[in-house]
Amino acid sequence: MRAIWGSRLDEFKKWTEGYVKAYEGEKGQLLPELKPSGVKYSGMVQFFGEVTSYAAGEIDFETLKVHLEARAKNGRLWEEGKREERVRIKVSTSDKPILLSSFPPGFPAVAWKKIESWRGKENNTA
Image 1 (tube, rainbow, N blue to C red):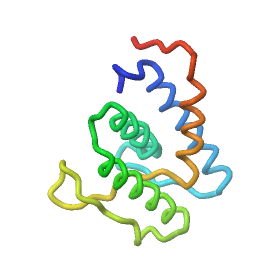
Image 2: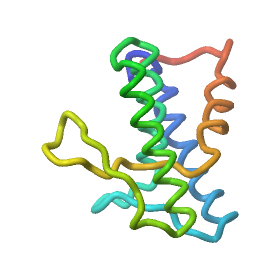
Image 3: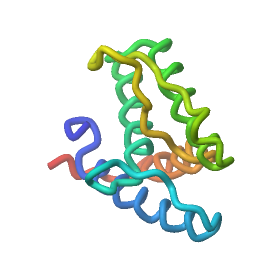
Image 4: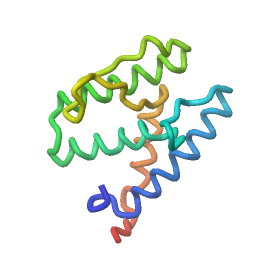
């Protein structure tokens, strides 16, 4: 990610932190967090990473589709208070299906606008 996006990766992570605060303030509902770090934007950064990996030919479309659908569905179910209905999927790094970190409904469209805002602007890749 760093080789492709440079400092944009840090910018995206920082932007997602702001997105989390705005989302929680608007919805009055906390997003799930990773334990023990407390990070709430993991699924959002994973979205960015998986889209980048697909564009770079590192993952196939089916993997991208399954992961993004699970992240989106789990984010929607979290928002709806149906946490027990979230889906687990099989990944290569685990023997058992796992609960992927998610993102809230509407996030991909907003994230894509953020990414598009970089078009034609210099990217510091150091």
